[in-house]
Image (cartoon, rainbow, N blue to C red; front, side, top):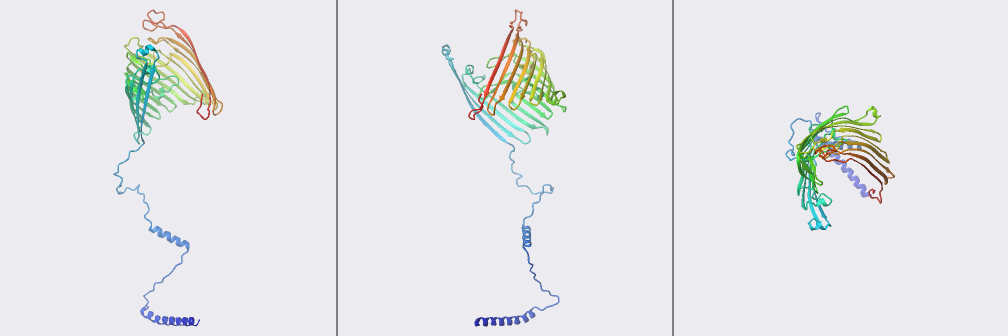
Length: 495
């Protein structure tokens, strides 16, 4: 260990000599003065929390500038790079193409028919249906529909067999329509417009009846409907026609034109009023034909209807149930130069109502009308007077209903000249045995008494020798059925 002691002693001697020698040099090279100061270095000890705070502060200082919302700033802004890009069309666009092929064949085993060349008949039809729909933001929806059909073969095939093959007059046909649905007139008013092949319409306050159906006709023209929360306006005009043929029926022109104008106004008190006028010009006086109606003669018909009703109120006499009441007044005037065609004025009045109390609902009404009452271009399927009552009840497992009716019809001048009186009753029920099985039935019984009358050709009385006498008589009819239905092996219900 001697060498270690000697080395330590020498190091201490050298260190003391170096310190002693350095002190005078530092004093000479750094003269002290009253004005000069020596910077003082301070080392501050930081704990873990202060270190984390300093780190977060440096991150915030180095972060990019925060987002500044300039939406409400009216100062000039830089141009958007996407401003010149083309805008894509908004709204759903869809299209559909469908094709069908129909074929029919009829044969006869009669030897005489086979010899005359009528033993076997066949025909085929081909059709294409196309549809394009476009939804827009501010102009409603646009719907374009086009149906085309072509027939080849014997056009009389349908007369000897089922199906629609051959029922059209022409071999080629089509049906076209362009509709604009839900066009916003303002915030609470919208419009539907159709151009092409369409159906005539009846305003809401008149068209919804339990017993009476004013009906509609097929026309090729234009129609519009403007509606809101408290009104309904419908108008249109077009050439009368019919849809015939297959596999997609096409429009075939008939004689005459039809126009209509109807309006419904709903009042705040729950009442509503409605009126409509129809004008048919040059329509056929008679339609004759079994498979195909052929017009004969011509007539002009002006018809109108007015109604006032109360819908879904709570009258005191009902006992808390909902009810609807309505009175409808009808009228028509027919002008024609066709022989034996019914002409003149006709009027009719229909009173109807309904009540609902819990699961029990009743419909009732009475009507009176003149013979030959028409609306539009067709006669109304309504007798000259009658009344009806209907009741329906339904619970979780049992539902039943029944009704009574009486109708009378007076003779009409022309070919329809037989009067009648009819009384009828009907009923139905269904009982649910379990989740899969049920039993039920229905029955309809009618007793009709026909009254004799003349044809109107030379006289209307049965004793008129110049007329066609219609014999009086009575007919009874009944139709009844019972059924049981269930599900077997998870299949749909079998009856």
